[in-house]
Image 1: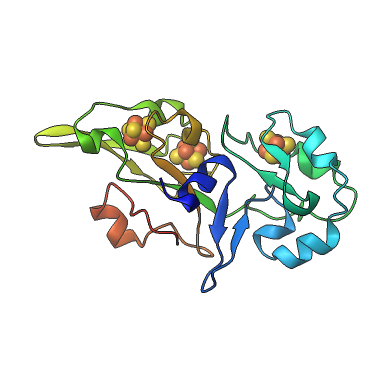
Image 2 (image 1 turned 30 degrees about the horizontal axis):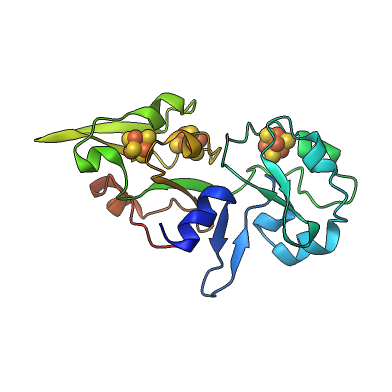
Length: 190
Ligand code: SF4
Ligand code: SF4
Ligand code: SF4
């Protein structure tokens, strides 16, 4: 597993478009999803959002800023972190909590001949479907429009084959045409 892939698993992160910087995942609805600098300026590092998170997916990260990890479970999108912040570090009125989805890597077991549907069984949004194929176990395919980016599928995968990915604004992780023909997403960072 590459260093970036390992960080994806332990602490969500993404590579900033066109730049080498790897930024951590922040809480849903936080300003960081559109402007990391604005979030860093607003957040007082008080830990209120971390303390308020019933799922325990928020941790104190580099510099004392809250980071989100899917290492143990997913985010329920309950908005408790949003309500707890008194420093204006969240865009509470934003329609979307973030622009996250997931990608399946080639570590996925059905691609290696082993039957597995664990991720689909844990996706409450019904965003993972299994495509039958000749001569092999059905492969998972993401309905990117249905995926909320909750990350519930990430820690349950026995192969560590699911990576949370930040989407480009208004898009799916892959163009629709490519999505239709590619049940497994590529592993390169976006
Ligand atoms: S939305 Fe809820 S589960 Fe998700 S990070 Fe905020 S408090 Fe935690
Ligand atoms: S849980 Fe992991 S190994 Fe199993 S089908 Fe989903 S991505 Fe593949
Ligand atoms: S991240 Fe997407 S695919 Fe995974 S469980 Fe959540 S909604 Fe389903």
